[in-house]
Image (tube, rainbow, N blue to C red; front, side):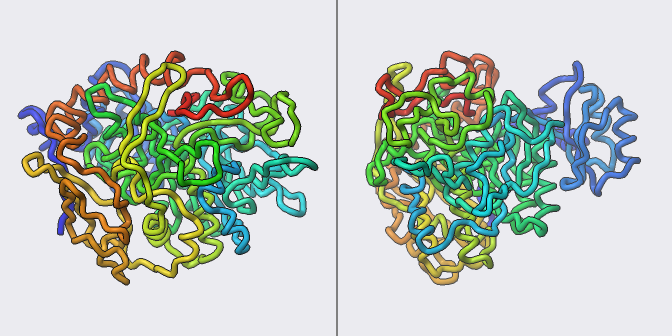
Length: 593
């Protein structure tokens, strides 16, 4: 059975252009016009030689980075010369080299990590590549002999690999921090990550402002593949993203993710923090970021621990991006994990995030057993799907230590199948900065297969056969149903090796009451009512997010007046009240994308 995709209307002029060399040029690049210079990624029909680079130079281009992983390179060139370059028979695709931005004790308890540690699984021997803003050399990243577990560092920005932004260190702490700075005499909390003895491979791609480019991230992914055997790199964490601008089948960033996956590396990606967007009445649906839109990747949304150690009261973070993905309608996210109000390792010195968000510094009283409100120099608080992705990466490291023969597809299928699936029908969240209340439903495109449960993933003996590509979805407005289409070789359909996912056919239709069984990879509480968000006037209509004037337009969430402004989700306001306790609400995203 072939996957089913939503068709997007094209004008007659666009169809005519698509028949010629212009079909090699992404639609986004075509729409940019011919003025000025543009940074592009050019893919060829073979690994480019100097002769290929010279062909681009002949069109006024300048080589910026070699991207042999994609049989391509990134270049700066006149926009007016792109169409001529597309006529070169060795060129297969030209796309924009996009800019990218960056996207514990409660966390580990919610994910059932202590059960893994008690069984002896702490990520030992597993290498996790953190492609982010760098990792500071902190005691939390040392092993029992006092040696650093940051076993390799490469800085693609031209620096030393140190974290001057403050995001990568925080992410690394969630993955593999051992809580060394919170194990003091009298300390009340041990702030360690999911895999506290895993090795870290530090690839710095984000600068001091948390910015990078497609080509830089692709280069880092390529290096992770090259170093896979040397450092036993089994996981890549991508807590970063950008808008989806074309199908994952053409997107160079997604193609790099797939290359790593096929090389045997699990790739975990943040879903994005745009779930509050309602600029065209989409209620946050269709806002999954790239490369989280790729069906191979494990894409992770964010939950709130609600300041308790039990997960039964945990709720979805209203800012967590929702599926389906643009262009391809891939069902995302795949999982959710703790991501709101996460305390993890603070980068050394005064990184940008600490300077911009001084009230997110954790008071010493949070973990050292005193009443001191003096700010800790060791730990820091951030919110976002970046943090949730890191939790899943750490869990994967533990799982792979316990069962090193698992393939990336088996890891994904197992995490989805064993995810905790008990959710309310809906919940509300108050943004204390604006006074706005957000309503969230716990459906397939919001929580995916459910909440990360490491203990359950370790306990099952299930081994899937086949791939674990996320399915695609289409909406039938007349019937009020959604059709899910799985890849023919999928391991996450119900009729896998052991039939443990019974209740789904090869193409499952979700009616008004849903047909998701308790043994399914999706929850019994999913909302598929005909009167819900899936009505004909909502996200599936021609006037919705799929149109050219939708959320990806110039006035959308990606514009300069959007969530990046100081007045909205990236506000400097803290989630700490004057008494130093966590406010029980969805707080500011604090610079997350």
